[in-house]
Length: 280
Image 1 (tube, helix red, strand yellow):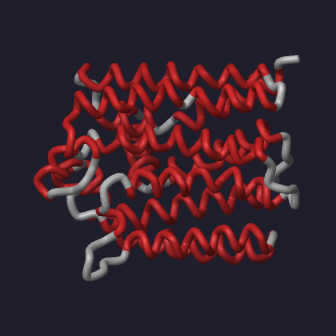
Image 2: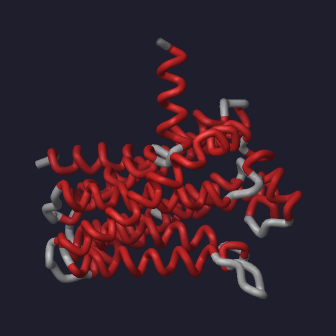
């Protein structure tokens, strides 16, 4: 039974299904905190879009053999299957978005164009290889999930929504840079321009602590400008990040540290947002 659970967990993580589920939880969080109703069709579109984007990215990675041998073996074994469901999810997301809401389709299509531009090789190299651009791009992608919730509801994009999107951007940026610490050995060997590869682990963790503390600014802005004191509860996420930063030097299994604890921040955010809706 334990072996079955382990295989199922590995499949969920390595296939990018878990990331797609995290995207669904982020959409639900946006729905709760923005006070906007969503529907199962949009949640399915978010799941398929996030899953397909990360699936294509994993299939294109070359250095995983060094930094993440377990995922490298999984991808080699299920490469054809991943390509099939990646393409099917991507096409299905576009068709579903078009049928659901033309503005949702426009966001999904624009995102697809950005992903292509981000990944293709040019005579000057890939955009994703430019210092910090990868982290900024990934953070921007995730910050569009609340935008999808807004445009699907036909409601205007307010200052509150923009600040919330920036909050999501900051949380993903922190998480994404932390994930680069796992790949530091392969990144140094390949000459990748990541923050950990350039500045080392200690300076990177200090930088992440600083950005993590500063991420309380959008929380305070939403609380003060829109008289929503309950949103201060989101500061728990800052403590959550400090917690897993501290685990880095504890010798914890990398799959548990990165793919379960760190990756689950949006699930934690959903739980907090649900609790906020229950507070009178």
